[in-house]
Length: 410
Image (tube, rainbow, N blue to C red; front, side, top):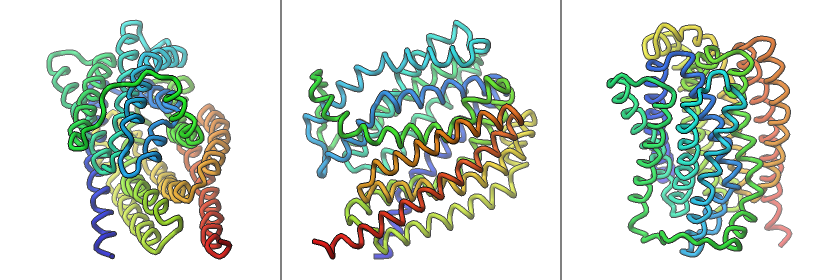
């Protein structure tokens, strides 16, 4: 039994490490080639796109996964594909409009076409990842995102070698990365012979949306909480501050590798047993220990990682990184607790806690970033993540007690 837990943990963690390594490589490439101002602008666009995709997809990826037993019905797959393709242009338009409204002075007209294409491609790549998970390939789904990052990093490095270093160029390479991710996703599920003919029927789309809608509050609220700092820094403190902070956040998020990956596994295990089993508790404890080790190493190596990997222009990110690592400890706990609570069938409770915490975060980030710039963003992250983790721990305790009592009442 213990061997099974270790194998399951190593499987998802290995894929998550590959994903994180690719994301880090992409962050290093764009930071060095674009400089702090360009990196800040790129981060604003990618953050806006990620939030747009989550809102527009309306939880249909999770809906498809929930309806899969053990693999999705071909009718659901065709509807899922049709809805995804139909939403792509809207995702591009919303991303383009939001980026222009937030930072018109640094987002040039020439970049708008690239922003539109990136926003559309990001939606399809996100849905492709969820489709792979619906077929039970959790590790492959995580790894597919890393493949997209890797292709984007290599493509932009090659483009820069030809003399083209711009935010628009980085976004165009992002579209190429999304295409690579979709192709990799197809290769991962090809053996299942998935239905690839899209269904353009509204009632099929609405069936997926109705089941997935309760999870939108959680997904969108969580992403907003994790990215509000980068979204507000550029308009409130300027693109340079946003670029330096983005480097600190990119490195700090490496501490989230284990908790994020194990969270997926905890959801599956908890949903299957309808309770917090010994296996779930042991996986949770292993993930916490690994996260603490990663945080400790990054705290010690922060000056070297920032100075040598990203460059001297980003050395002001060192104290920011050390503060964000404290915040990441709380976020790691929150990610795992939220998955356990959702596995126990409490989707609405998780969504309510996340939306409430996000509402608090909007005010806290706005006030502290306005007062202290990037340092204020770090303080806001620590405070809001700590509150969020505490509320989810409370929800997990309540949900677990209810699940333990249920068999006695049957």
